[in-house]
Amino acid sequence: MNIGEHDARIITKDICSDCGSQCCKLGGVVATKNESDAITERGYPNHFVKLKCDVYGIDWGKDGSCVYLNDSGCSIYHVRPLGCRMFPVVQTRNHDVILVKCPLASSLSDDEISTRKRILLQRPNYVIRESEHLRQNHEKDLRMRIAKYEHERV
Image (cartoon, rainbow, N blue to C red; front, side, top):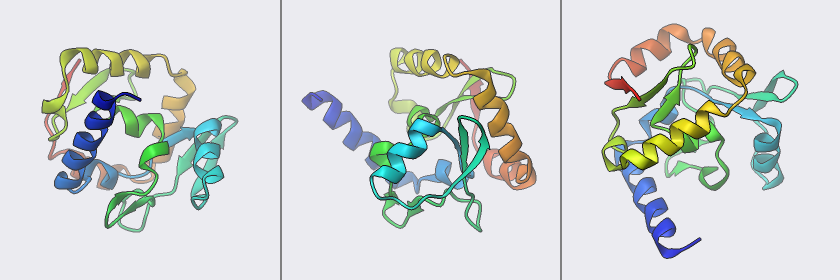
């Protein structure tokens, strides 16, 4: 990793901390088996539920927050799943890609947004499908929380 990448990670983490990590309060995300294994192999607790062969959901906390979120931010920040790393660029159930207008969004260049979109569109369709099954149980809370963010299609 070069100095520029290191600085960008620090800035990103600072922006997210200043925001209160609101995206992490939108519920758990999905992870592939490789992602869940990377997290648990580093000694983090296993908060995954197997949804389908290669797709795992992260448990939602009692308040709807990701269970890996703590007072000092994301406890798995360096090994967080793809969906977390790509935020605020998000792929919807219709396979559209949107940019959520959170504080981090204004710090991303058009190239960074395009790169994140390309990466998300390479994910297998079944990952998105399974993430929707996970979210269905929390649809009402999720809609209320996400309604405060503006977004646009990218």
